[in-house]
Amino acid sequence: MASWREIDRIRKDPTAFRALAMRLLKFGTDLTDWEKDFLASIGGDRDSKEFTTRQSEKLLQIRDDNEFVTKCHDGFSVPLLLRRCREARLDLSESDEAWIEGFFERSNGISMKRKHVGRLLRCARELHIIEEEFANQLPL
Image 1 (cartoon, rainbow, N blue to C red):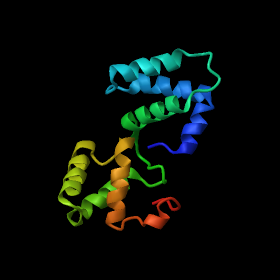
Image 2 (cartoon, rainbow, N blue to C red):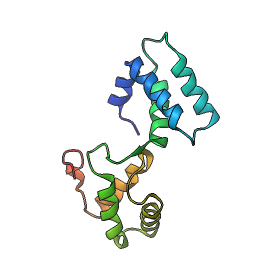
Image 3 (cartoon, helix red, strand yellow):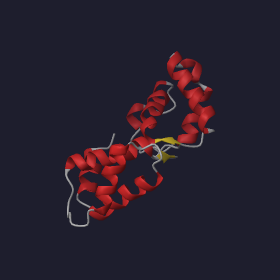
């Protein structure tokens, strides 16, 4: 989920807001009809100087649900965390173990959708690959 800072920053920058909407519309194959209509209407809106908080939240939610990343927002490498979690997966719950293994096989361990990064970070913390208090400070 996007932070309040990110939501506020993007809503006050209409150029970046429209650019993100158009990029998501162009590359988002898993979008619903509503999301496509929303992104198209934002991309075509040349009059707004600022967008609402709700529009910003929705835009960033669509981004989080559809954008592939190789780095976490904390600076951690997704492929490295995924590989390390896979190596130590037997210490996780059965559902997390199956999720890590299945995800690794499907994605070849290179990237993941932003919406899955939170679960990966939680697994990495549970396995002590990263420490809770340093997760926002140190890149892996």
